[in-house]
Image (cartoon, rainbow, N blue to C red; front, side):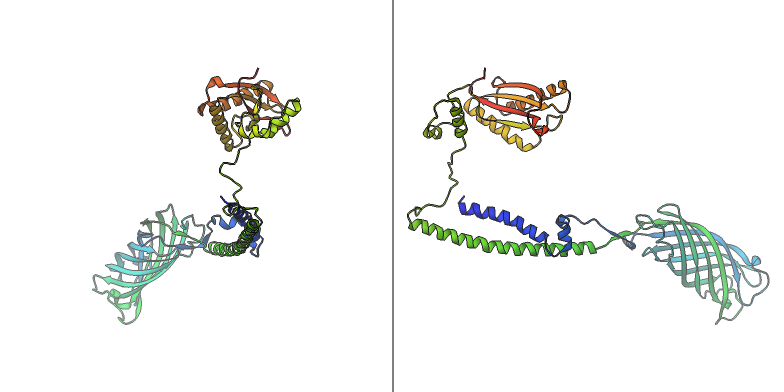
Length: 446
């Protein structure tokens, strides 16, 4: 990788962070307050007073009711209201199109008492429009209310079998409901059917005046899918989209600025290269590659040279360090090779604080196998917490854990020394004491 590419990539990462920060501090109050919320899913907000139909096959109902009817006509005839009362059967099939609006096709029949107090059979069919006044009151999660007060009005035909009359009729009334469950409703109805005066065979055929009053009670069954879809408020999604577009525009503007800056830096590097070539400080085929493919690894030569100075021994030459193996840093084979590596654990566990530490375990195993080294593992615990016995047990377990990981990676057991030192308090803060130390040797230490 060329140095300028490294520089540009680093600059891009840094400037990307600056760009994000600049966008966060932009004009949008939403982005400024909490930029993370811009890209998080929006929690649905439902409109309690709005519901949508499920499908054509949903919210159909069938009602069956029984009760009494009383005929009042013109001319009035003889007898009072109770003399004109007879049983009635009512069957209705309908559908609710919205939580408030619906329609039904209703059939009514049995007998009525005409103006001469004679019992006659009748049949009535009418189509009604209904409006539920109470559906929005204490409804459940699918929009179904417990109570219903439903006025209705419609029109149809009523037939007098005896008089062979089937005039046009208008129906109206009110229905009361109590819902037992999602599909079963108790319903009661008070209504009236008004038609022309000659319905019972007596009266003016061009004027209305015959009435059939009805009162009934029964059950209504819902079939198909019951309930309504909850409608989600779209405004939060619209606002979030606007905020995201604004955030994107700010980032794009910053990226454009950084692209111009990188292009300018690239041009400066090219000019600097030319100057160095002119002065003879850079070969024509050089590529500024400071990260050479065979760049030497750190072999701790400086650290080991310092140790030798402290011991008063002769300092190895630089050539020896460069040519030697990374582990040929001391004439004393009992000396620890390189720097010890510590592995840190969570409190009162044998769990590493970070899975990234497994990389160090793999590297230790690779080096130890390659050079035939011995591994010494010293487990420790935090003396500030736990009992002495528990800390000793924990330090042994941590050392055994690292040993097991190395064995899984091909280090034989006879190349490993494990020990636990129990609780220690050598380091601050206390959590640093919860570690296991790994050291490499050419031969087992005395």
